[in-house]
Image 1 (spheres, rainbow, N blue to C red):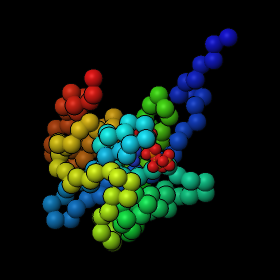
Image 2: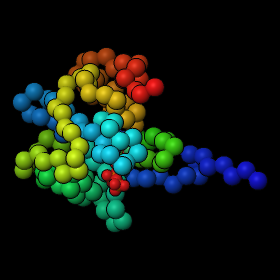
Image 3: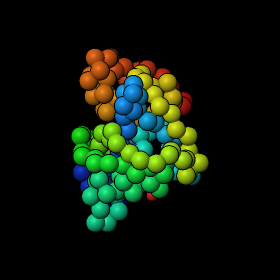
Length: 154
Ligand SMILES: Nc1nc2c([nH]c(=O)n2[C@H]2C[C@H](O)[C@@H](COP(=O)(O)OP(=O)(O)OP(=O)(O)O)O2)c(=O)[nH]1
């Protein structure tokens, strides 16, 4: 018997993601995924999975304290996207964040980089491409997926 697991039957993993915007120049905060996680070493926007009973805002605030040592101000969902990875079908709740307190401290051994578009860090998680497209549109820039795909590992 063949058991098919398709996008329609797989359960979504809900993820809260923060697009931290630096006020002085509009730079975006990217962090690298720590060793031991799927896609280790890939660059992403900081965030993580919702725990039972948490709102997106609560999860994002908890994750950024845990991972980066900063406490964010208000965060509201800006966009929702989905991406089907071999390891999980994720639903990404994207929040723009312009206020936080505390000093950045990489608590999971990851790296951080303030970036302008197009991003110089690579490879970037493919689940982040739609948001890079929207951020580019907002800034009057062209989003070229091929630029990012060329920087994926073979
Ligand atoms: N944080 C984040 N996750 C992203 C982005 N794009 C994207 O596809 N994802 C996916 C990758 C993962 O499958 C999922 C996030 O899960 P995770 O494993 O990093 O979450 P977590 O920190 O709660 O992990 P865990 O150690 O508790 O298992 O969302 C992004 O830009 N930022």
